[in-house]
Every structure is written in structure tokens, then in C-alpha cells.
Length: 273
Image 1 (cartoon, rainbow, N blue to C red):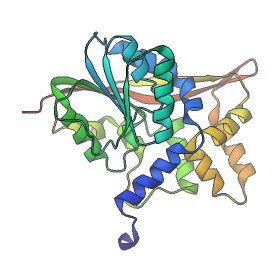
Image 2: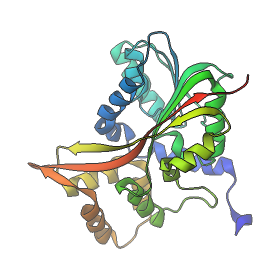
Image 3: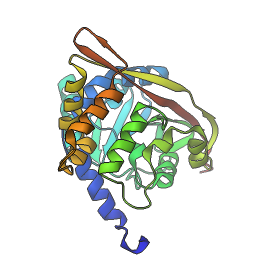
Image 4: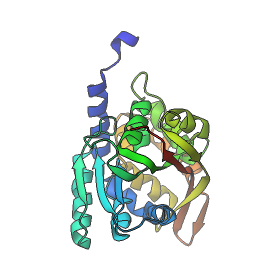
């Protein structure tokens, strides 16, 4: 019943713990090449002020800073921010990382030329608020660029599988809806003058077998780790199901996995501030 639905702070704390579980930094390594391409496509110029929303371990922030941008990265998970800071220090990059909420950013209005998010802001429980915040902190004429997993893909199927064993809180929409062009347009319609989207296939290439890929995600990917912990019986069928749907090919002893994303929803801000 709606009266029993958890309050938003309880939902966010649950989400924070989910993303702090496992070690997303290990997962992020296998999509760094896509993050590099994403930043390259934006043609970042030195001195551009860029905000990475739900930055994780810095997959977008790091290459943006290498390109000369003045970068701020925020995420709800403390441990991911610490990993991002460590990566920046290792490379000698001056990036400001802080714990923050995509739905209520601490940044002032029109503070950034470019606002980006890769597989991050899409998980905010109130997507309209996250969208409004990205528009608010982007200067008029600036750019908002997102990469979001699409619903009818391997990743979308994975969300559904996780949801069967760790259902989302009542009233929280599927994050994969951010991969639907019409939904993106509706959520950003109040803040943009132009919207361009394109589907892209992202390839994950792992140096281990398909069953080992399943185990890798069970250990390191927080949502799967927490869903798995809820299972008492039936784990073997779940593994078989995951293996059957996971790989699109193999190279030697390694697995190749594909997932399609909407890359990217790029919008010029038209806010009248």
C-alpha cells in the first residue's frame, strides 16, 4: 500500500548502501574506453567548467580534466568519491570531488558550461528532480550530456532480473526509462532548446569466461551483490539464466558482452536566468 512506502531519505540511504556495496571501481574499468570516447565527442576545451553528476570513480571526470576542463564530480557514495580522488591524485589532476545528491545539488545556478552523467543520474529515485537540477546548474547555452542504458537490451534485462529479487521501492521508476528518447525529451523539456540522441552499442571485453563474468558482477556490482544476498535457494538457476543471457561472443577464454545505451542526450540549456 502507498501508506507503507518508505520516505525519500530512507530510499536514498538504501541506494547509497547499494552503490557502496561490492567495488564499482572494478566494474568501471571495463567501460573506461566508452567514457573516454564520450568525453572526446564533446570536444572539451581548456578552461571549460564541467560537472560530472553521479561520477562514480571518475570515469568521465578524469579524461575531462586531462583535456583541460575545470572539473567537479559528485556522487552519493562516499567510497566511490574516495576512489575518484585517489585516481586524480595519482595522475596529478586537480579535480574537486565531493559527496552530493543529484536531486539537490549544492552547486549554484548556471555554474557550469557542461554537465555530464554516464550511467549515474539515471539511478536517482526522482528523475524529474535530477533533470531539473542538471538544467539549473548548467549555464544558458551550455550542454547537458548523458549516457543511459536502454530498456530493451541486455542491461535492461539485467535490471529486470535484479528487480525480481531486490524490488525497487514503491513509486520509483525504472532507471532504464532514461534510455527512452521520448522520456528523456519529456524530462528535460522545460530546460532545453535542442535535444539530440543516438543509440550506441557498448562492448565489455573481459579476460575471463562467461561464468566468471557472472561471478565478477556478483562480487563487485553492488545491485547484484545485494540482490544475491537475498536469495536462499535457486542460485544455480539464476546463474544459468545470467550465463545464457550474458555473452554475445567469446575470444579465446574471454567473454564479450554487449549493452546498448542512449548516448548521448545532448541538450543546449535555454534557461532564462
